[in-house]
Image (cartoon, rainbow, N blue to C red; front, side):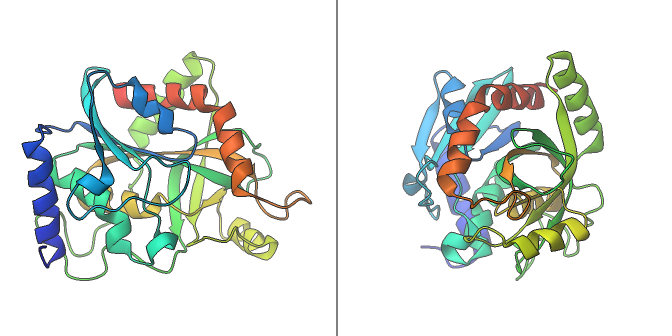
Length: 273
């Protein structure tokens, strides 16, 4: 096996190119409730993460752990069906590796999806929220360590991580389809515990509208490389303390299944625009 992160990325990218992945317009990272979206790709190349050098599959039960490549909506698309979460390994290099690989393959746009807890009491469980900005409260950053200069600068600006023009167009197109999209700030905690009620009060105080355990590492990597980023959160439940009831992973999965058709339509639009 290769030693440096740059070598590992190169090795994995060459493996995928040899499999026929020669162009990537859009990389789509599928969060909870969207795994079936990968079935929309016809004549797709499907690879298990475990087949790809240096890749690891996560252990979350509703994440497939597959890379799906093909043409969809007149674009060359790679779908990453499942994540290797930071809380599963405590290693940001491993967590962000799939995003780095998409950059190496030339992806121009990232569509990053997730299920999140709703912090903003003006929003509702079941809403879809475009991410306007994020707060990284995970305690780590995927760019810590030697910078890979060919991917991006040592100190990347994060002011415009989530592309405003694409957000505006996506909201407009979704509204024409009768879909209301919220817009707000996503805050990443490390997990795997759900946040405490006190942590949710803190999150609201510092400006978060939703909380979760993913998305930020991929967005940082994509922004570092100058890619367009669209982030979409499904607000699966009201966060801890907003309602007087406990939270569970099963609740998140069940809620995501109810809105998956609408969620999928929004991702369709995000690919097309």
